[in-house]
Length: 196
Ligand code: AMP
Image (cartoon, rainbow, N blue to C red; front, side, top):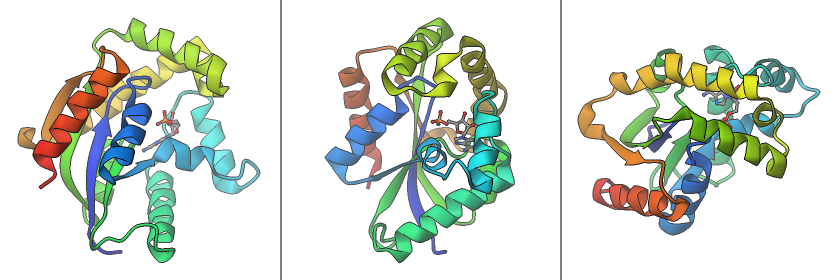
């Protein structure tokens, strides 16, 4: 696979990555790609679908090797079917890398252009948001407070550390505890400044 240009969007579960990512893609043409969405699109009866469910339903991260393999295969498919042109397109990666090991594994193919971090220091805001989302979207891993707390813990113990693998000059922190429109505007401003 050739060199893939990518922006990363980081933030704890429920910080608004999906909403902001979709809007940024619609506005700028960057290709929003969420590993959570890729996983949820797997056939539940298949080997990978079963693996995903066994971890996600407990609020745990899927093991690194399997995650990167599924992600790489998916990107290969987008390239092969002309949905992503590595010569001119960029991804907005939402949900990967989620561990230092994943950052290492994707480093040789993914060229990280900039990282937007949706910052929400008060986790009670997140728990409330996710429980509400569960009622709307029917996501199993949002519906149970203990699963939500396990996901936040995975973010704190494994994902937050990924940021230290990247230079500070690549990172823009955005206050995620604002209205969705304001979070989007701040992210778009940071994107425009760093897209060239
Ligand atoms: P998300 O929609 O980003 O909250 O992801 C939902 C679930 O998918 C997570 O709780 C994990 O079980 C799994 N997942 C998504 N992305 C990754 C990743 N990069 N590494 C491991 N597990 C992931």
